[in-house]
Image 1 (tube, rainbow, N blue to C red):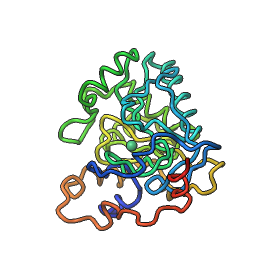
Image 2 (image 1 turned 180 degrees about the horizontal axis):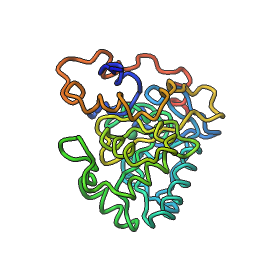
Image 3 (image 1 turned 60 degrees about the vertical axis):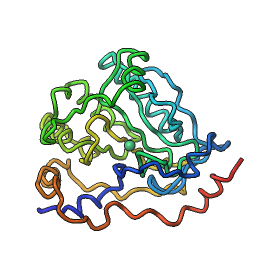
Image 4 (image 1 turned 30 degrees about the vertical axis):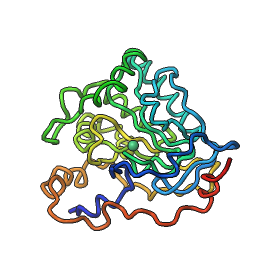
Length: 281
Ligand SMILES: [Zn+2]
């Protein structure tokens, strides 16, 4: 089966659409709304009311780059981070570095992401730290941690190891996770190391450009949020065949023509309920 460039890119709504410093009203709001948490709209055109704050330090994780004020999410997301942090610490003794979640009321950010809008997305770094102090040193006062992918993009780098593999598997196996975006070389490494009998979790790990130092984790719509727009279901299978191979082709690596529908058009109509969330006291 030949998977076209456009087909592959349009199969997902992802995160790698750089936004360069265009201010949005959502970034100006400094606090969540009060009341029960409700996810509204989609990851790339939505918001969240009643978002909760991810504590800066929890068992097994450190929330980094707090100055960005993007540490808000649905309670399911916060519970997920706490659970995988503890599980990862039991496995490796290290702390997870947790990056951006959503803004206080979600919505479009001024930089870095098109998604992360409705309190269900989180970036998890693949480098881990032995203490909160090391985590801050790594993330707040330096460049990004090292890439897990070689500079030619074809395979993982020497930084990729058992801890990283264990982490991505742990994330993917969590009941609340709907999909994870990771660099194609990372997906390939996972495909090659998974056993023949136990490959079901690979399904959730979707190849995407970038995402070589962190992975992007997306939860499914929670049952308490009927206005949450679910993403299209993932295709069947472990995703280790033709679709993954395509990402290493010339067409994928050096596209020569504009890709229909990419980057996705900016949504023009925000859900009405989000306008109320933005304007609430
Ligand atoms: Zn992300």
